Every structure is written in structure tokens, then in C-alpha cells.
Image (cartoon, rainbow, N blue to C red; front, side, top):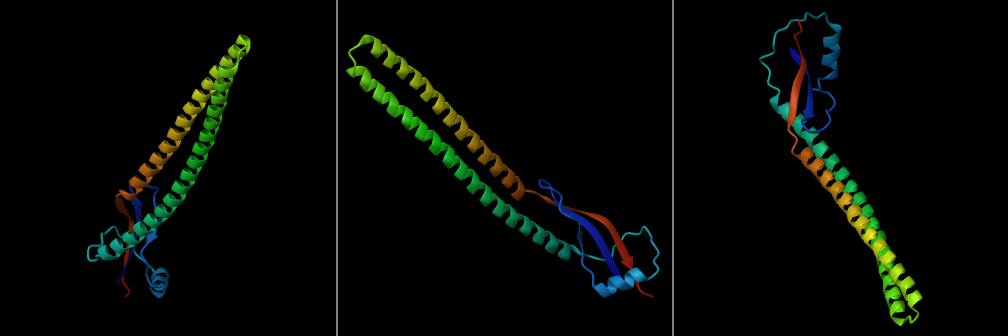
Length: 177
């Protein structure tokens, strides 16, 4: 007497897992498939595969956790590196603009010609606008990177908190006479 059960396993918040077949010995499978069979719609009640099923599910969940952990680490490192580059670039631009503005203020104080003073003041106002724009872009890009990190965090949290489910596709019960 033997039983073969085909069932699917999935996690509720992830992509469906591939179909998992409970292993049976090769010689038994060869015998089973070479014998004439009679199909019925009876349910198989005298078998309990709950321990094997639980072990299979735990193995799949462990593999998924390990995969998610590796992907999470790689993705967080990538996002953090990009965020660091973006922030560093904006800070350098901002510091450069602040230095130019300081120099214009110094030149303005030292200038005696009113027309040149007005030109320096206009340049300073334009650089202040540009500085405000760069600071605004810095905050916007920084927030976008933070949002991306939060989205990844939520995705991984959902994966960790996912509930497993199984569904029997079909059951084959046989006996040799």
C-alpha cells in the first residue's frame, strides 16, 4: 500500500511557491506506474503526513527567509550608497554656493562704485535663489531615498510576517495484489 499526495505551498504575501511533491522511492514509483490502476474519488483517511508536511514547510520558509535576508542586505547597501552619493553631491554644491555668496558679500562691502554694488547685490540674490533651489532638491531627493528605504522595509516585513498555506492538488492511493 502506498500514497502519493501532490500539494502546493505558498506564502500569503509573496509570489506562489513551486509545486512540492512528497518523495517516494524510485522502485515503488516504477512499480506503481507500470501496474493497471483503478481511479476512485475516495478520500484517504488512514494516512498522516503532518510531520513531513511541517518539515517541508519549515524548510521552504527557512530558504525564503535566507533569500530575503540576502536580498535585503544587498538592496539596503545599494540604496544607502546611492543616498550617500546624492547627499554628498548636493552638500558640495551647497557649500560651493555658500562660499560664492560669502565672497560676493565681501566684495559688496569693499566696493565703492554704486553701479558695481548693485550688480554684486543682484548676483548675490540670484545665487541665494539658486542655493534655495539646491537645498530644496537636496531635501526632495533625500526624502525620495528615505521613501524607497521605507518601502523596502515594509516589503521585507510583509515577507517575514507572511502566513503559509497548503492546498492538496490530488492524492493517489495504491496497493499491490
